[in-house]
Image (cartoon, rainbow, N blue to C red; front, side):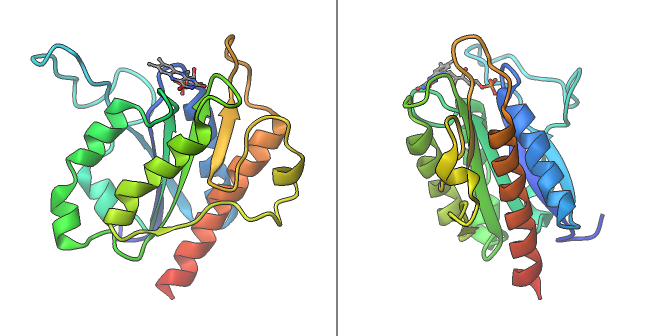
Length: 198
Ligand SMILES: Cc1cc2nc3c(=O)[nH]c(=O)nc-3n(C[C@H](O)[C@H](O)[C@H](O)COP(=O)(O)O)c2cc1C
Protein backbone atom coordinates (compact mmCIF):
# COMPACT_ATOMS: atom_id res chain seq x y z
CA UNK A 1 0.00 0.00 0.00
CA UNK A 2 1.53 3.29 -1.04
CA UNK A 3 1.51 6.16 1.39
CA UNK A 4 -1.46 8.56 1.55
CA UNK A 5 -3.72 6.58 -0.78
CA UNK A 6 -6.42 5.55 1.67
CA UNK A 7 -8.72 7.02 4.29
CA UNK A 8 -8.49 5.34 7.69
CA UNK A 9 -11.87 4.67 9.34
CA UNK A 10 -10.84 3.97 12.92
CA UNK A 11 -13.46 3.05 15.48
CA UNK A 12 -14.22 1.26 18.72
CA UNK A 13 -17.58 -0.48 19.18
CA UNK A 14 -18.82 -2.79 21.92
CA UNK A 15 -22.32 -3.60 20.64
CA UNK A 16 -21.99 -2.90 16.93
CA UNK A 17 -23.74 0.46 16.40
CA UNK A 18 -20.56 2.49 15.91
CA UNK A 19 -19.23 -0.31 13.69
CA UNK A 20 -22.35 0.00 11.49
CA UNK A 21 -21.68 3.76 11.13
CA UNK A 22 -18.04 2.99 10.29
CA UNK A 23 -19.09 0.67 7.46
CA UNK A 24 -21.43 3.28 6.01
CA UNK A 25 -18.80 6.02 6.30
CA UNK A 26 -16.35 3.75 4.46
CA UNK A 27 -18.96 3.34 1.72
CA UNK A 28 -19.12 7.14 1.41
CA UNK A 29 -15.32 7.32 1.19
CA UNK A 30 -15.33 4.79 -1.64
CA UNK A 31 -18.21 6.59 -3.41
CA UNK A 32 -15.74 9.49 -3.68
CA UNK A 33 -13.22 7.17 -5.36
CA UNK A 34 -10.83 6.74 -2.43
CA UNK A 35 -9.96 3.46 -0.74
CA UNK A 36 -11.28 3.11 2.81
CA UNK A 37 -9.29 1.10 5.35
CA UNK A 38 -11.42 0.12 8.37
CA UNK A 39 -9.59 -0.61 11.61
CA UNK A 40 -10.62 -1.04 15.23
CA UNK A 41 -8.85 -1.08 18.58
CA UNK A 42 -8.87 -3.74 21.30
CA UNK A 43 -10.85 -3.31 24.51
CA UNK A 44 -8.95 -2.03 27.52
CA UNK A 45 -8.89 -4.47 30.40
CA UNK A 46 -9.14 -3.55 34.05
CA UNK A 47 -6.73 -6.45 34.58
CA UNK A 48 -3.36 -4.99 33.65
CA UNK A 49 -1.83 -8.35 32.69
CA UNK A 50 -4.48 -9.13 30.07
CA UNK A 51 -3.31 -8.62 26.49
CA UNK A 52 -5.30 -9.11 23.32
CA UNK A 53 -4.13 -11.30 20.45
CA UNK A 54 -2.55 -9.26 17.68
CA UNK A 55 -5.32 -10.30 15.30
CA UNK A 56 -8.92 -10.18 16.63
CA UNK A 57 -11.02 -13.37 16.50
CA UNK A 58 -13.56 -11.65 14.27
CA UNK A 59 -14.30 -8.27 12.72
CA UNK A 60 -11.91 -5.61 11.53
CA UNK A 61 -8.17 -5.72 12.17
CA UNK A 62 -6.66 -3.67 14.95
CA UNK A 63 -5.15 -0.36 13.84
CA UNK A 64 -1.40 0.05 13.83
CA UNK A 65 0.62 3.23 14.08
CA UNK A 66 1.47 2.77 10.38
CA UNK A 67 -2.25 2.85 9.46
CA UNK A 68 -2.49 6.27 11.04
CA UNK A 69 0.83 7.56 9.71
CA UNK A 70 0.14 6.52 6.12
CA UNK A 71 -3.52 7.54 5.79
CA UNK A 72 -4.65 10.45 3.63
CA UNK A 73 -7.40 11.28 6.10
CA UNK A 74 -9.10 9.91 9.19
CA UNK A 75 -12.63 9.16 10.35
CA UNK A 76 -12.67 8.42 14.06
CA UNK A 77 -15.65 6.73 15.72
CA UNK A 78 -16.59 5.86 19.28
CA UNK A 79 -19.65 5.04 21.33
CA UNK A 80 -20.65 7.89 23.64
CA UNK A 81 -19.57 6.99 27.17
CA UNK A 82 -20.55 9.47 29.84
CA UNK A 83 -20.53 12.18 27.19
CA UNK A 84 -17.04 11.32 26.02
CA UNK A 85 -15.15 8.87 23.81
CA UNK A 86 -14.64 5.29 25.02
CA UNK A 87 -11.41 4.44 26.84
CA UNK A 88 -10.06 1.93 24.26
CA UNK A 89 -9.97 4.60 21.58
CA UNK A 90 -8.47 7.19 23.92
CA UNK A 91 -5.89 4.59 25.00
CA UNK A 92 -4.92 4.04 21.36
CA UNK A 93 -4.66 7.79 20.73
CA UNK A 94 -2.59 8.26 23.87
CA UNK A 95 -0.01 5.94 22.31
CA UNK A 96 0.52 8.16 19.26
CA UNK A 97 3.11 10.59 20.68
CA UNK A 98 5.75 9.61 18.14
CA UNK A 99 3.38 10.59 15.32
CA UNK A 100 2.73 13.88 17.11
CA UNK A 101 6.48 14.49 17.49
CA UNK A 102 7.16 13.82 13.82
CA UNK A 103 4.10 15.85 12.72
CA UNK A 104 2.92 12.90 10.64
CA UNK A 105 -0.76 13.88 10.69
CA UNK A 106 -0.40 17.62 10.13
CA UNK A 107 -2.65 18.89 7.34
CA UNK A 108 -4.67 15.67 6.90
CA UNK A 109 -8.47 15.98 7.02
CA UNK A 110 -10.41 14.28 9.82
CA UNK A 111 -14.01 13.78 10.89
CA UNK A 112 -15.67 12.07 13.84
CA UNK A 113 -18.71 9.89 14.52
CA UNK A 114 -20.51 8.40 17.49
CA UNK A 115 -23.43 6.30 18.69
CA UNK A 116 -25.29 6.93 21.93
CA UNK A 117 -28.26 5.40 23.71
CA UNK A 118 -30.20 8.63 24.14
CA UNK A 119 -30.82 11.65 21.93
CA UNK A 120 -29.51 14.21 24.40
CA UNK A 121 -27.05 11.98 26.23
CA UNK A 122 -23.85 13.66 25.10
CA UNK A 123 -23.36 13.06 21.38
CA UNK A 124 -22.21 16.61 20.77
CA UNK A 125 -19.79 16.66 23.72
CA UNK A 126 -18.39 13.32 22.55
CA UNK A 127 -17.92 14.52 18.97
CA UNK A 128 -16.38 17.83 20.01
CA UNK A 129 -13.97 16.29 22.52
CA UNK A 130 -12.95 13.59 20.02
CA UNK A 131 -11.68 16.46 17.88
CA UNK A 132 -9.22 17.68 20.54
CA UNK A 133 -6.46 15.06 20.10
CA UNK A 134 -6.83 15.42 16.33
CA UNK A 135 -6.33 19.19 16.59
CA UNK A 136 -3.20 18.57 18.66
CA UNK A 137 -1.98 16.36 15.84
CA UNK A 138 -2.52 19.26 13.42
CA UNK A 139 -5.33 17.60 11.49
CA UNK A 140 -7.84 19.68 9.51
CA UNK A 141 -11.23 18.98 11.10
CA UNK A 142 -14.40 18.86 9.01
CA UNK A 143 -18.01 18.25 10.03
CA UNK A 144 -21.18 18.12 7.97
CA UNK A 145 -22.45 21.28 6.21
CA UNK A 146 -26.16 22.23 6.24
CA UNK A 147 -26.23 21.75 2.48
CA UNK A 148 -26.88 18.15 3.57
CA UNK A 149 -30.68 18.57 3.76
CA UNK A 150 -31.09 15.61 6.13
CA UNK A 151 -29.20 17.56 8.78
CA UNK A 152 -32.16 19.90 9.14
CA UNK A 153 -34.88 17.25 9.08
CA UNK A 154 -33.36 14.40 11.07
CA UNK A 155 -35.41 13.08 13.98
CA UNK A 156 -32.53 10.87 15.16
CA UNK A 157 -28.76 11.15 14.66
CA UNK A 158 -26.66 13.31 12.36
CA UNK A 159 -25.06 16.57 13.52
CA UNK A 160 -22.94 19.36 12.04
CA UNK A 161 -20.11 18.08 14.27
CA UNK A 162 -20.09 14.64 12.69
CA UNK A 163 -22.16 11.55 11.92
CA UNK A 164 -24.13 9.88 14.69
CA UNK A 165 -26.73 7.29 15.63
CA UNK A 166 -29.25 7.25 18.46
CA UNK A 167 -29.42 3.56 19.44
CA UNK A 168 -32.02 3.79 22.23
CA UNK A 169 -32.13 1.29 25.06
CA UNK A 170 -32.81 -1.68 22.78
CA UNK A 171 -30.15 -1.09 20.13
CA UNK A 172 -32.36 0.37 17.38
CA UNK A 173 -30.94 -0.14 13.87
CA UNK A 174 -29.14 2.77 12.21
CA UNK A 175 -31.90 4.52 10.19
CA UNK A 176 -31.81 5.77 6.61
CA UNK A 177 -31.19 9.41 7.58
CA UNK A 178 -28.30 8.45 9.84
CA UNK A 179 -26.88 6.25 7.07
CA UNK A 180 -27.21 9.06 4.53
CA UNK A 181 -25.33 11.51 6.74
CA UNK A 182 -22.67 8.94 7.63
CA UNK A 183 -21.95 8.33 3.94
CA UNK A 184 -21.90 12.10 3.35
CA UNK A 185 -19.22 12.51 6.01
CA UNK A 186 -17.14 9.74 4.44
CA UNK A 187 -17.44 11.37 1.02
CA UNK A 188 -16.54 14.77 2.44
CA UNK A 189 -13.32 13.60 4.08
CA UNK A 190 -12.36 11.67 0.93
CA UNK A 191 -12.95 14.70 -1.31
CA UNK A 192 -11.05 16.96 1.08
CA UNK A 193 -8.13 14.53 1.17
CA UNK A 194 -7.85 14.70 -2.61
CA UNK A 195 -8.01 18.52 -2.58
CA UNK A 196 -5.46 18.83 0.21
CA UNK A 197 -3.05 16.51 -1.54
CA UNK A 198 -3.23 18.29 -4.89
C1 LIG B 1 -20.01 2.93 30.30
C2 LIG B 1 -21.04 3.43 29.33
C3 LIG B 1 -21.36 4.76 29.32
C4 LIG B 1 -22.35 5.25 28.45
N1 LIG B 1 -22.62 6.59 28.45
C5 LIG B 1 -23.61 7.06 27.65
C6 LIG B 1 -23.93 8.45 27.65
O1 LIG B 1 -23.28 9.29 28.30
N2 LIG B 1 -24.96 8.86 26.86
C7 LIG B 1 -25.71 7.98 26.11
O2 LIG B 1 -26.65 8.41 25.45
N3 LIG B 1 -25.37 6.66 26.04
C8 LIG B 1 -24.35 6.18 26.80
N4 LIG B 1 -24.01 4.86 26.74
C9 LIG B 1 -24.67 3.99 25.75
C10 LIG B 1 -23.83 3.82 24.47
O3 LIG B 1 -23.34 5.05 24.01
C11 LIG B 1 -24.72 3.24 23.36
O4 LIG B 1 -25.23 2.01 23.78
C12 LIG B 1 -23.97 3.09 22.03
O5 LIG B 1 -24.92 2.96 21.00
C13 LIG B 1 -23.04 1.87 22.02
O6 LIG B 1 -22.33 1.85 20.79
P1 LIG B 1 -21.71 0.49 20.22
O7 LIG B 1 -22.89 -0.36 19.80
O8 LIG B 1 -20.88 0.91 19.07
O9 LIG B 1 -20.92 -0.16 21.32
C14 LIG B 1 -23.03 4.36 27.60
C15 LIG B 1 -22.67 2.99 27.60
C16 LIG B 1 -21.72 2.53 28.47
C17 LIG B 1 -21.34 1.06 28.45
